[in-house]
Length: 101
Image (cartoon, rainbow, N blue to C red; front, side, top):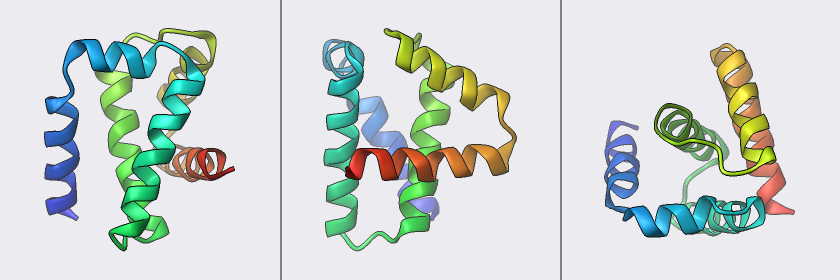
């Protein structure tokens, strides 16, 4: 898992500010981006728990480093910050379910 964490952090750091703004500009764009990354993770053989933990890493990064760009992102950030670790893990699973639909 540490290897995956390092790769996720590396990927987050590699995204240039313009691309990050583009991804976060609308909730549908963010969902599409996340769906693409989830699909790639599944093709690489990541299981549900690995995907959820990776989603948690991304959500922690966004909550700590990015300002929400729309109402949906603001709501997600508030939910994320108000939940404990168990609740955040459950929210990560729900986010995975949402982008798979």
